[in-house]
Image (cartoon, rainbow, N blue to C red; front, side, top):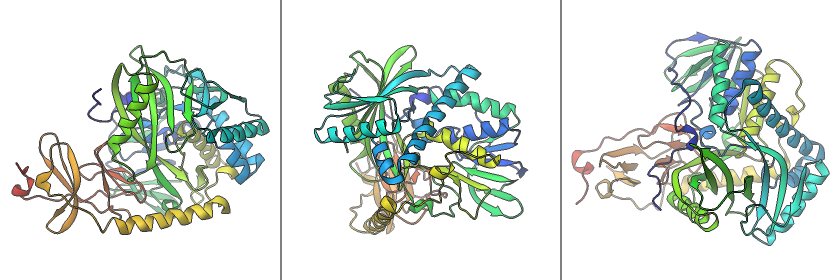
Length: 513
């Protein structure tokens, strides 16, 4: 079956959001929220309801980042996490993690009911499963953690959707929805409450003083009392977040199945062959989202092969009648797998951060909005200590930060040596590769019309060399997960500056016949 030519999330077809202007003048407000995904929009929604004047900024389009590329599971079942949380944080904090996510689920459900939002919200059960004998013990340990924490669930031998499982673990009463339709309603209320939204506006710095001043790339300024950064990597990094997070990439297909799908959300615990499944309705027809193939951004096999592996899995399990959408998502993961939500550092009491949601952004982003709103409104929040970015668990964080930084150092060196370069003229239409231009390492992509797009291949964050992602037609940095378009524009941080474009001589631009 022929794959779609380019990744296109189902959620954005059609895009429910109107276009918002770019910021073109200096402004003042109470709170600036940077990053218009579910965390940023929900934060702006809550603060605007409190009477705060809010400006919401996004470097691209509203909800076009990770929020627009999600599988949109509203669940507290975040892989096999609770046994690990009990071990690393203790029973009380592990229970807080579960309760926080269930409170977030209830907030989403209540908001949908109160605002009468048509967003395909549906209560479903969530299932973990394994197809390996070695995974049975993991699920048994997780089931014991459920019992300790009072989580409504059970260990089973068979699942409603047969996937060759050896065992499964159910978490009852979870949910799914259409995230962009939900956020459209919240954003409409932000605007109705006097909030302002600016797209294609990149925040690059904050000047601190009696008030805070957010500086944008085009040198516009917004003076405010508080800043909330929900922009994946914090754009104002005073807490070494780039060294405390790593970026993972995963892949999603939307397929119309040949076999009947019994409902529910499924996630395998087997690594690296993790598989995620859930049902969606597209134009009245039932489709299934198939996700998986997670890997560190900029590393691994040719990205197109990840889609092909998922396609084979879908064909072998539920069959494929149609295959209209595919896309990939990027998620940040903290050292201890719990998001960083709260004050940027102890020395920056009016700058807040929300990041590291580890693929579970629907509930975790909602937690972030509730927690940060409470901090700004000077209210107590029972989950502040669990999520505070200033925490540092020696086990496993110390070991992980050493591994992450050693890996980055090795990647930085490896990217500078041992590369086999192509000639620009050798690139075929819809092909990208590392090339040499006048003795300089560059990244080149020839589009389907034969036009060559050449950029400097050195990431503008910390100098690692980007790698070509054929599946998504992007340049990805293996060190900290920055991603750039074929013309060098920043698509994902922490990089803030684009890759410089390289002008080509006419002869070099021609295809070698």
